[in-house]
Image (cartoon, rainbow, N blue to C red):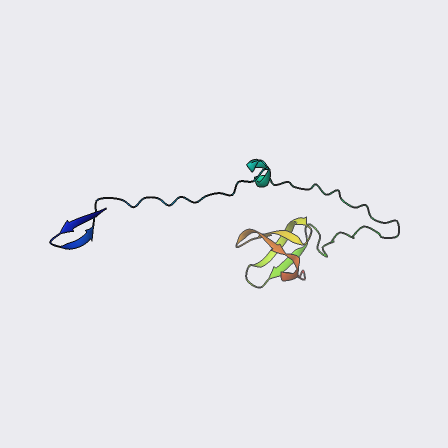
Length: 108
């Protein structure tokens, strides 16, 4: 709406603009069919007869091994899960560290 003030046209500040209407295309198919998403279930492929299954990682450390870490110091391996070692450090408590970051310490 426009309000007339002294011969100048000014927009009416109190009125809100009318919302724009956008026409949607009219398709013959149902609207829900376009919105559905389907997920394909994929069956795992069996290994061919000539190909062996991958070999699991085996850590070079064993439970009870004494190790050395540059930041945490000396510790003892308490648990092994793949390459992840759980180590009890006397001064820092229990930490989980990848076995590449520790060295086997020599007992004196």
